[in-house]
Length: 106
Image 1: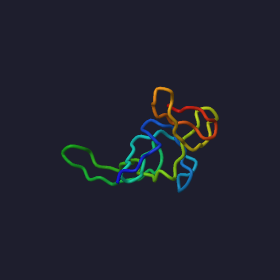
Image 2: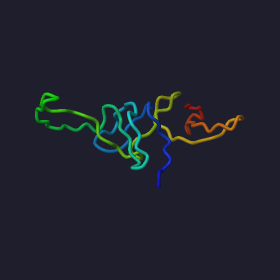
Image 3: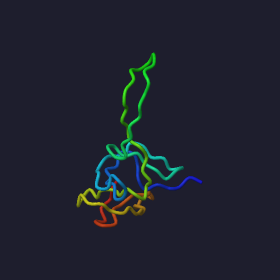
C-alpha cells in the first residue's frame, strides 16, 4: 500500500528527531512506499569504495533516508516547523497549507 505523503521534492524541512535533530535542508527525494525522505545535508553516511575502471576509489559521503515522521516542513511565513493540512480551493484543486499560520504552501 502506498501511503500519501505531505512532503514533496524541493520542500524546505527541519529534522525534528534523531541524531541530526535541528538540521535544515531541502528534500531531494521522496520514497512514499517506505515512508521515507532524503534530506540534503542530513543523515550523512560514509562508504569506502574500491577503485574501478570507471571511478577513483576513496571515501564517499552521501545522504541516507529519514522516516517522514522525523522531519517537519518549515513554515514559509514564520520560518519554524509546522504541520501540513489539505484543503480545496474554488476550482477544486487540493492545496497544502500550514497548520500554524494557515498560509498556503503550494
